[in-house]
Image (cartoon, helix red, strand yellow):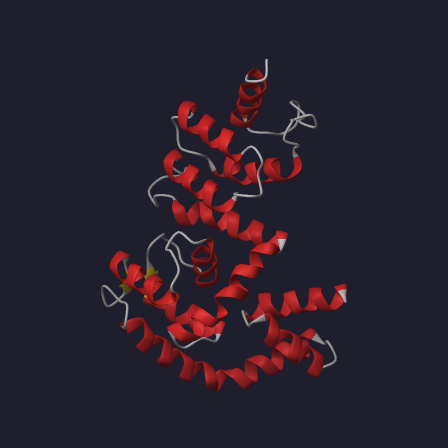
Length: 240
């Protein structure tokens, strides 16, 4: 079972197909990933051309310019999907589309991504949302989405992420995953005036998932960023 699960994940990574399609084709080809993916690409080439045309027409329903869906189009798109724009499932979708910038889907990102997902309309995508949302339950997928969120959310002209934006994303992504989330966000808002570097962003997830809420297993000599060391001191000082 575990080997089959790994092969499904490998197939999905290679093809961007759904896990259901992956499982069916792998079973058909006796769980041979190379043969199954080869069949998938051969069989789907003609279909992808049709899907691309459908996705281009679909893109036209929401585009703000010839080349992109912007804020207005995104609000309409989310409304038709019946999801809040801040719903984490929209971040998963952006991740699957390889979108580079928040609140924007370029035509290429939208058309290529939706074709790879195998959806041709808002109604079809709406049916797939529970599946996309469920991928966040997998720790490896969640980690990829979390790390992706850094570049997606930051100002392209800056190396780091603005604290206000970082706090908003942490509250969105780490709710129910990080017991000290409220305290961390308050600490960052009050004390951190610089932008949040990528290594701090990435290591916070490790901190959130490995360090106990009483900080009893925190190693000050570990390779934690200074701001996390400072947070631990701040948190401990509140108890004395």
